[in-house]
Length: 457
Image (cartoon, rainbow, N blue to C red; front, side):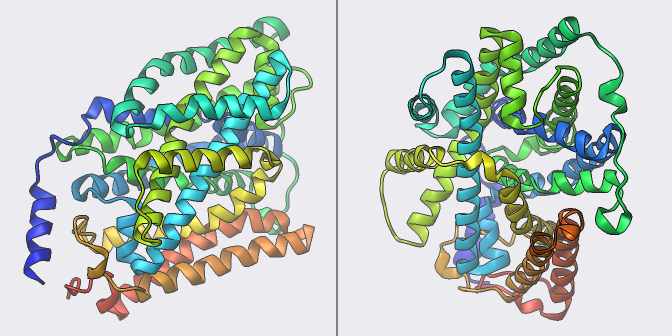
C-alpha cells in the first residue's frame, strides 16, 4: 500500500472526533426522518391491500430487518466516516460512485418534493388558494433550515418539533375515536384472497413493499458518518437500530391504520390521510402536518443538496459555494412540485427500490466479508480509485436488470403485477448479495476500487 494511503487511513481511524456531532445531536437530527407522513400512509395502504394481520406481521419483520442491516451500516460509517459517495467508490469505482450520487440526490429531492406537497395540500385544505403559491411558501421556509450545514440545524429544529409530531398523532387517534367511535375494525380488516403464484402471502408482500424505502439505509450511512466513534454502540441500537424503526414504522403504521378504518370515507393515500387529519382537528391538525413534514424535509433537503454538490464537484468539476447548491436544489424542488409527482409515487418507489436494494445488499456483503475493515479511505482523492470496479458493477447491474424485468412484466401483463411487486425487491437484493459474494471469492483484485492496495488475500 502507498505510504500516503496508509498514513491517511491511520489518521481517519484515529483522528479527533471533536468536529463530529454528539450522540444527542445526531440522534435528534436522525429522528427527524421518522416523521415522514409516507410512513403513516404505507402502513394503512398495506393493511387495506393485504389485511391488518398480514400488515402487522410484515411490519414487524421489516423493523427487524431494517434494524439489523442499519446496525451493520451505521457502525461501518461511524468508524470510517464513510458516506454513500465514498462507499460507492469502493464497490463501484469512480464512475459507479457518480451514478450512485445522482440516484441518491434525485431520490432525496423526490422525497422533498413529495413530502412538501403534503404540506401544500394541508394548507389548501385549511385556507384554499393556488397550489403554486403554497408550494413557493413551503420551499421558501424550508430552504433556510438547511443553510449552514447539518450540524447547525438538524438537531435543533427536530428536537423542537418531535413532541408536536409524536403527541399530535396520538391526539389525532384519540380525537378520531371520540368523534367516530372506536372498534376493532382497524385490527381485523380482512385479507383478500391472493394466490401464492400471484404475489405470495400478504405478510411477504408487505415486507417487500417496505423494501421500496430501503433508501433509509443510504440515509443512515450519510448521517452516521457525522457521528463520533466512541458513540458507536449507542447509535447502533438507539439512533439507527430497531428502536428507531419501532417509532418510524410501527407507531406510524398504527396511526395510519387506525385513522383509515375509523374516519368514514378517508381515502387511503398520503394526501388523503393528511387531509383527514386537517378536517378532523382543524388548525391543530394543520400544525401537526406542518411539524411532521418540516422534520422529514430538513433531512431530504440536506441529503439532496449535499449529494448534488458532491456530484457537481467531483464529476462535473463545478466549484460553487454551498449556498448556491442549496438554492439550486431548492429551485429544482419547487419546479418539480408544480408537476403531478404524487400521482407517480408507487411507480417511483418501485424503480428506486430496485436500484437501492441492490446497492444495500452489496454494501452489507462487502462489510461482512471484509470483516468491517476500512476500504473506503475517506480522505483519499478520487485519483486513487479505478474508474470502474468490476465486482460491484456486475452485481449491481445484473440484480437491477432482474428487478426491473419483473417490474416490467407486471406493467405488460397486469396478471403478474402482484408477483413483480412482491418478488422483484426480494430477488433483486438476494441476487445482488449472491453475485457479489461469488465475485468476492473469484476476483479478489476487485474487492475494492482502490488502486493503491489489493484487498484481503
